[in-house]
Image (cartoon, rainbow, N blue to C red; front, side, top):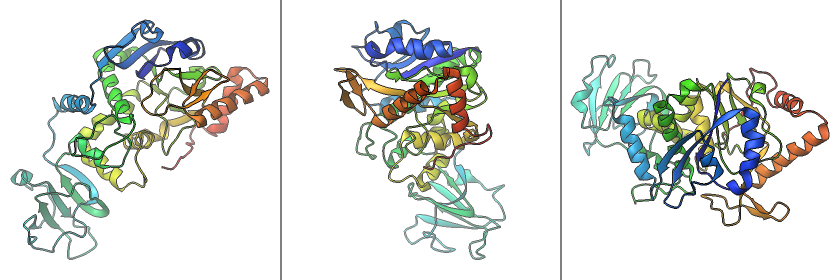
Length: 401
């Protein structure tokens, strides 16, 4: 089976990590290397990740990733005929706001009457309205049964789950997602029209979209059987598991750094899952109300982050049951003078570099010590640990948001 390993977004800390990356990861999984990264005028093209990559997908980084998302959104919509309204089942956008079977005094809500169904309803006649709300024939309250309303200006951030109500809403621009708290779109500057998200998770969302475009353009999805999306600043406490030990029909994550979902730092996929995994931003554009409404009502306080979003997205695409886990044996570092978009880390005098996430480092060293005490081969160690983490092939360990 052919495998493509992809370093996403940046090539960092190569002076400290590349030799171990080659020995403990790339050679272990017998993969070709691809870099899908952002570049700036001072990018170091002599770094070994770039020089040894078989494929190089480069994007000139903007000062504000809103520019990149705008271009991506335009590309997604270029050849797509979007519906006038998106249908949301069992969602009531008018909950507590409908005045009764008449128009609201301010004229914002228009009562359209009772309808047995909407099979022949002329949505085009209400193209200047933000949403249509229908209480269907099974709605339990007799007064509201079969009633239909049109709303001129919608409160886009208000959604209430309610059975037997259908809300039809105009597609949302991607920036509307920035009204959800509070960390998953980092990298987009605040222009006064939305909330500000800290960090850099939005940049990683964009590069997933960009990677998918390049994989399609080059036909690499058909050329390779398995894909590993990873980062350049990992130290491997022990060698990465050989792919023969990981069921190729599953999606594999290391078992740590959950933060309410699944880590964005390393993922192993097959050719049937790669497109679904990378279509995160595409679905935010093409299924905007579906994603926004469910994210708005989901119990993800105090904020959405990329880990939660990945878990949510895989559930929405119907592949959540294919997720499995293996031991988390890597940790992220930063060298002297090295940059970071998020965590700067703490300096280890023992190692001579900055360790970015203490929990990640602790877990990797724990596995290293367990492996050294086990007197097992690497393969035997992984086989036993994978069975512990995934008790049966059909059992998914659930990690709540």
